[in-house]
Amino acid sequence: MFKRYQGTILNTRLLNQMSYPDPITSRGQVRVRDKLGTVLESYFVIEVRRERLLPDVMDQLWRREKRELMKPLKVRMGMDEGEEGIDHGGVQQEFFRVAIAEIMNPDYGMFVIDEQSRMAWFRPCSLEPLYKFELVGLLFSLAIYNGLTLPVNFPLAFYRKLQGLPVKSLSHVEDGWPALAKGLQSLLDWSDGDVADVFTRTYDFDVEGPWMNVTVDMHKIGRDDAWVPAHLDLDYFLNGYTSTRSNSITVAKKTPGCPKNRNAKTQLSGQDSEEVAITTGDPRIPESEVRPAAKSSVTSEAAMVTNTNREQYVSDHIFWLTDKSIRPQFEAFGKTFFTCISRRAPELLTVSDFKRLVEGTQDVTVDDLRRIATYEGGYTWDHPTIHDFWDAVQDFSPEQIRLLLEFVTASDRIPAAGVASVSFTVQKNGEGDERLPTSITCYGKLLLPAYSCKEALREKLGLAIENCKGFGVQ
Image (cartoon, rainbow, N blue to C red):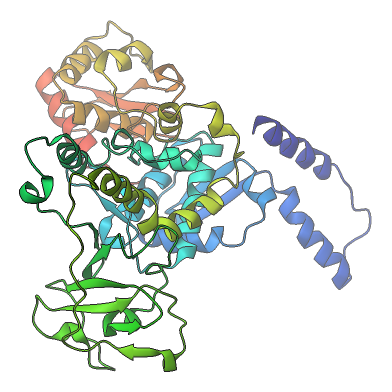
């Protein structure tokens, strides 16, 4: 990546030295100069509005040439809304923080969050088009290529899949789905009789879709069989069509929030507990070969999990969880994830190191910040205000420490290179108990007024780190 970066800079300098003695007048010459404009640019610039950040960034990433993406990134964010951020690193971090937070929001429809581990995963049966997952993969690639950590929290299974490693044991999923892993391990460890009598678990896989829950009989649908594709038409999904050529799955209406179909009688408009059969095959099946599911058509219940098949059940459940149910979304994401980085690069890392490279680490302490801190503008390590500052920070919770780091650097993560790579400078910014601390995240500077007492400093610093948003560099 560094060699490509050097090559891009060298080519830019050489092209900038080219001279055009004659004025460009013809239409053909103008077209040539316009095409050269892309090459002559020193940076790949993204300009977004804070209120329309995702639409703006997706518009600007769509169909970009790879040579553009390989240039150093610069972000202009909120310029039309009065912000004046100068991108020396801080604006990029803020941009990715806001963008990723919006993308990972379960309400956006692309990812879900496990309630216990708080880790993200692809949403099965997502109604969002696959090109959005491609653009998210490209966004990840840009961040990694430019040395930025992302405010995400994915399980190790995510990074194993990106490295091409299998995800097939409970140890591979226990960090992302601890409750599920514990339950499946109990199923395997049970020795007091048959598990069918105690756990009463059927051989199926449950998927929580956007408007309905889907139960898949893993015996009837093989690992390589067609399943409900991510681009399944919503009307087709809600009408409960079934084909004689495909296997069937059970769909239970999810209330509240299941929209009515205004064009056709839907099997989901009856009782909440009603179940219907829908196709798991190709939605492009000719209409002549498709019949509406009868109102009384309910798929037969799956077989019970027993001592004999429980190991295969756990293996199939992990496969459906980490592969089958989210395959279209993950493949779309992976298609662009390696745009700016080599596919072979992650193979040089362990799974944990790969995760640390992408996400950084949130294990930051006051001692870490104190060790890397520098002082400017009249402050020194033994200044009374600096003593009060560290005394106040020493009482912070881990969450408040991360907020302080984010307030100063625009990221609450420590990069894979370690805390020594973080810039954390405390600069004097006048005096007065009524003033709030500010920061210049582009340079990693905390602008701290000199307060008369520790209590005033603690109050104002707490207000600043918990209510900060936007840029205002003069």
